[in-house]
Every structure is written in C-alpha cells, then in structure tokens.
Length: 257
Image (cartoon, rainbow, N blue to C red; front, side, top):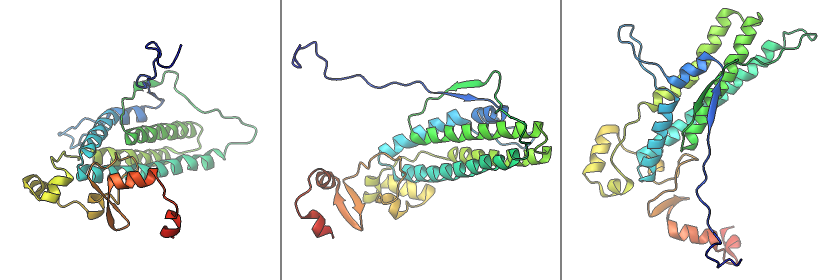
C-alpha cells in the first residue's frame, strides 16, 4: 500500500485524556466544593476548584482575543499560584521534623482514606492544573497532619494553626480569581483610544506598559495576536520574528555580539 493510496490515512484525530482527582481528607474536599455564603453569620462565599477552572478558561479565551487585562490577570494568578505551592510544599517539608519524633523501632505508614472522593477534572488551561496540584498538596499535608495529631506528635492547637495556614494559601487564590470581570476591549482598541478603551480605563484603570506590549506575560499565556511585539526596547514584526527563528543567515551571531 503506497502513501498515496486513499486508504492510507496520513492524519490522526485529536488527542483525548481523562483526568480524575482523588482526595482523602474532608478539608480538601471542602476546598474543592467551595463555601456557600451565610449572611446571618456574616460568612462570605468562596468558589470551589471547578469554578476556578472555569474562570481560568474564560481568562484564557479573553487573552486569545488580545485582551491585555486578561494577560494581566493570568500573570497575577500564575505568580500567586506558584508562591502558594512553594508555601504548601514548605509546610509539607516541616512534617518531616514532626515525624522525626517517632522512635526508630516504630514503622509508620502513610494514611489514606478507605473511600477517597474522586472528581473529574475538566481543565483546558495549565494554570487550572496548577491549582489542582495545589489542592492535592493540601490534601497530602492534611493527611500527614491528621496522622501526626492522632499519634500525639501534634497538639490540637498546632493542628489547627497548620490547617489555617495551609487553607489560607488556597483560599487566597480562589478569592482573587472570583474577582475577575470580563472587559470587552483589545489592544487595538487601546491603540485607537476608542470608546471601549475609554470605558475600560474608567472601570479598572490603564494597562501597565510592559503588559500591553508583551514584555511581561504569564508563562502559559497564548501567543500575542497583535502585529507588533516588544523585544529589547524595539517594536518588531511578528512575521519578521518568526522568519528569523526559522532562517539564520551566516554572520548573524557575530553581528549580534
């Protein structure tokens, strides 16, 4: 059979994958589900992970539409997520000191739920997955902390302090994301200074220059759709930039040096 035979398929279909999260503590499942508001007790609501993932999908679509405000939000949430993960991993690392109190003649296995909660994950953005990783880190920490409290390695007060500190890392991300508001504007609108640009500026203020010209963006932001990008202080055509990446003329390195 030749490659030109009609029965020979040169293309493949789209990739598909099923992702499921497994949580072992009720603290983590509560964070996944979120918290309903209670006005009588003055408790405000907090979105759960599914809603966070939806918001990140919306921000990505807005960024694809060349919305610089969406770029700003994506960068902000990425930075906060990475800081939160570092903080959570530091707390997990601190549990090694706690369990070092166990006598050498004792063997302690990690704790796990006999019936863990499983949830499907429908995320189309990398930041959505990073948030899921943060939640699994939280679940891991709580499993270790609950076991340590059970074994008298942590007091109830120490356990509550640890839970509050770790929970705040997740809640701060969720509370920040639920503040996102869609703004119908793109970079071209701002260049033209039209009515949409004026309304956006009045609503949330101007876009930082390094965000507008693309010098500072999330590592997971989609490619800029605008005709110009900012490189080392100069505006360079996207088409020219792509061409230079593909074709290197002799002497380019020497000239750059």
